[in-house]
Image 1 (cartoon, rainbow, N blue to C red):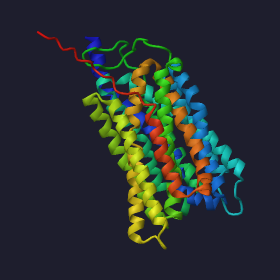
Image 2 (image 1 turned 60 degrees about the vertical axis):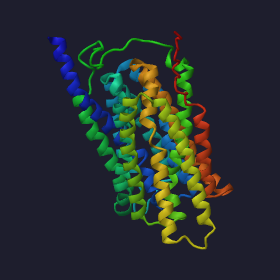
Image 3 (image 1 turned 90 degrees about the horizontal axis):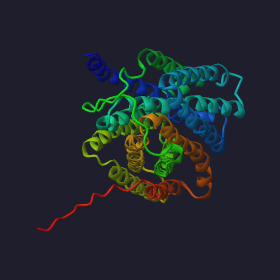
Image 4 (image 1 turned 90 degrees about the vertical axis):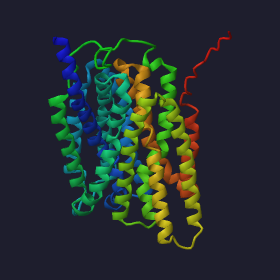
Length: 426
């Protein structure tokens, strides 16, 4: 009777755990995805060039890349709760310090080293939320629901990005970057409270085979750091994130400089992109749970990304040959950028579910840390590379390279397991 009550409580409480995971990721995503939506204002407020802007935007990604795997290992060793609480509290503190000391005010513009160090620190501390919240979801949800649950958790990234895109540019324009960093710190503090309130280990220590719900899974397969199949997916995830970060970090600059869009249009475009990404991530998780076709979906998505970026590059090349960018052409460019951004964001939840499923729930923190390390290495390198690509080629070259990278990623995603039918002749 006691075990039955525990399982019933788990089934109800797991949605609160998922909500905490979404909130934690959204709080941090509002920073690392939201701050780049204020890139044009950051460039002018801090008196930065494109290369310096790329450096500071990339450094937050570098901080996450450096810290993801250590945070993931600590999560598997200590548990989700202490790591997530520590990470949220320290990230909120770092953002509050930036609001106090690293925001431009009348007569004072912080130097590039101080801004760079602040964003690097935010990345180092915020890297805690990804693996710890992902492991919690893997622990509380069974195999037949993990795709949907992880995809819902992954909607936190575009959700946070959409929130950031909607409010951070306006805050930066009207109240300055002190308000930007202060609001982001507040997000983390609110999430910290609900994490303290709701996140704990499941009541039962074994998996109920009927319900497929939470518990301590057995250790199977090689250690994550020695698993070649895991590393192959990790590489694919990292490579496919490069074109995604190209849009997230420099999409606003492209719309401003090439399409001559205003702040309101840029904000609406990036918010639409993020909301579209949220919807398609939830749909893809549920659809692949029902059809058990995660690997097929991942490969189809990767091919679609390659086609979308190639189409965007072609459209930009055509627009570049015109004397001026007409309103109709500007609308087409915005629509194509949004479609491409949604397409390159669709696969995350499914890829992370496949990765964590192969690793097993007990090693999920480490496996997700491996993946997020590769993701945020690209988050660091992509903004650094784009100004140089622009110098050597142009915007069509930037988007065409995104298509090439998607084709490369396709080579690393595992192929679907083929079932062999044995025909018996009578």
